[in-house]
Length: 259
Length: 326
Ligand SMILES: Nc1ncnc2c1ncn2[C@@H]1O[C@H](COP(=O)(O)OP(=O)(O)OP(=O)(O)O)[C@@H](O)[C@H]1O
Ligand SMILES: [Mg+2]
Image 1 (cartoon, rainbow over the protein chains, first blue to last red):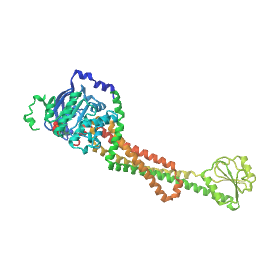
Image 2: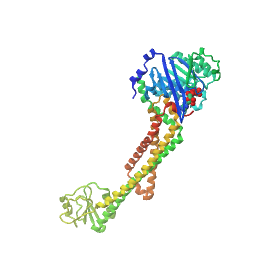
Image 3: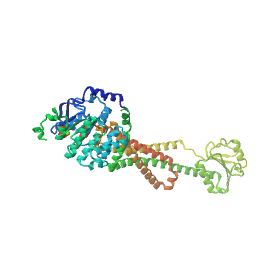
Image 4: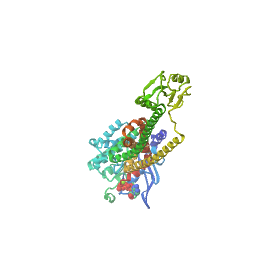
């Protein structure tokens, strides 16, 4: 069923040594067709993300951040252009390999959490561990550890519906870390958190980057988050307008004021 | 790494099972309605099967009773009323039910004298040969030797290969005529065709009901399925989830429906034929077979009904499924 040799070849480290890019998007376009109208959500976005980098994506609502996340996370197929993860063209992966990638390689934090309502927090966190084949005792232990890490040690057996928005967001963060991914894609992970918890989450993500070399890409409007990141990427109307370290960005200009 | 990829294939079946049970708990009301749908369809099938088993049993029972009475009356007509008769009985082997009952009837009629064994023929007015076996000519002659009248009744063709040297051989059994056999067969075919037609419609409706409710379940869980796919669930996992759900619904519904159908049909026929006759003629192994058939058919149909919804769910693109709530 699953071609082990191929997977091993696809995700072997040596290829990564020669190029520091863990994610590379080349002229990615995405057009949504609904009825007669076409929406150009991405109009040719190119982006290189280095291994162990903390990249922040920002831009006005509807500028295509979520669409770009879906494309580089292997959740949707771009209309044109290429996405490479660890030098591998995502378009060439078959269904099983894509599932493996989503399960092991990438941790997603979705803008609207997407927790499974009928499951407890712990089950939400351990679900992808069981997809990865982890024993249930081990998964349980790790799940509890992760939930404690995001400050939800007391809420392990609650259903997401019984939690506040911020708490749900933290469950989503714990879930994204379930299989110790190489890459974390976080779509506005601190949008619903108070500033203290938000800062804690930012610290957590930064620590993952510093200590474990996890590559982190977030969409955010949070100044603290932008300042903590290695590079900030400004998007507008489906294009990446500029990429620069936070020190080179003037956060006082108009384009930041409106957010 | 290779080992963990291996386990990715095996483990999720248990996870799928867990998720399905969770889904039942959350959507309890609707699950019950779906189960009831299956139960009704299967109850219908089971009641028809049970009816057939009971009808066959009763018909068989009645045929045996008629045959016994007819033989007895024939015997009396030929040999004379019980009062003056000494009846010798030669048992060749195991008795059929009809023969057994004939003996009971004879015993109840209180013939002047009944004698068995080697001396069955001594002073007898008539000899009755019963059981599975064949009388040789010599044995026949020995039996008939001391009889008062040399009148021999046999209950089966082939029991006596030859008539006694002196006297008369009477066969009590009556073979069905060819046209009678054919008429019964045609009648049987007509009923089973009609039944098959009604049952097919009922089961088809059941299948559509399950498919419909599963499709609803898929739409309702669009986001959930999308999320699972984003977390690395294989399409096969999603497919398994719906197949397991449907198989469980089918199994539980079929069990309930089979019990319901059997009870209903038995009660209905007990009213028409009388409880005693139904109880006496009930073919229990046949009934259990019908029960097993119903459970298998119910579960099987539920799985068939789930094929399309499961495929539909498993083919969903993750990003597409995620957007459905926004
Ligand atoms: N499934 C879809 N069908 C049609 N149009 C879509 C779809 N998804 C996104 N769009 C459109 O594509 C554009 C980009 O959307 P996207 O969700 O990527 O924006 P965003 O930058 O994430 O915005 P926000 O900050 O509000 O989350 C929007 O104009 C949106 O309407
Ligand atoms: Mg968005």
